[in-house]
Length: 111
Image (cartoon, rainbow, N blue to C red; front, side, top):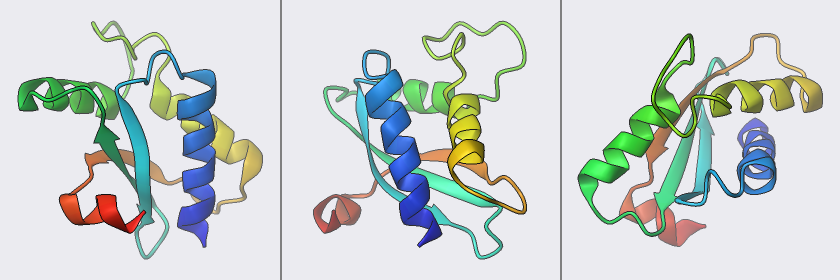
């Protein structure tokens, strides 16, 4: 239940505020750890076929912004914006740490 609420918030941010910046991928699934301290966000790439490009985008998404970084996400810090929206819309004892991952083939057909 928590994972579906987190997925809704993440999707609103990715497809709302950052629709132009985050046009390379879509949020497929969100899973939470047992203690709700980690949120794994599984994404599916659209037009990015090369594995090297996918890995670059994934590393940019998972980068914790704390200074200058050459990325299209560096100025906006997508993880920070998602965390702020989660704070506004949900009540957590501990704010979950966000980790982006690439969706596996089996996950794509479930959604």
